[in-house]
Length: 127
Image (cartoon, rainbow, N blue to C red; front, side, top):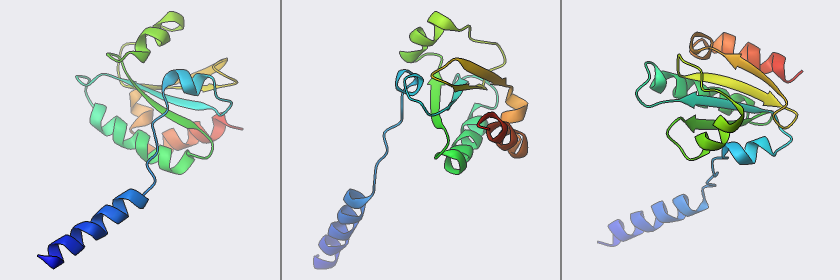
């Protein structure tokens, strides 16, 4: 019993000491000076789980240079997004923004799913 309690205490202390990062919303990222990579997706779209995985991998590599935001077309943030932009077909895709949303680039699904293409586009966009 003591071993179980000790194990639970150790797990609790590890979990509480781990830093939890809150995902940034589209609105927060648009008002931030750091460039944004915005993945627009729908749960029903082909390749969405692969695209999200690739997006998160790029986030790990480029988190110092970009805010990475996921935008589900069924989310509350989509309403604000649609005020200025049109949701393109062929979900998922990535839009790159800098200068508080003044410049954007469109990356198609095939580029997102190819690590070298996605990384190259992110690298070139921040130069």
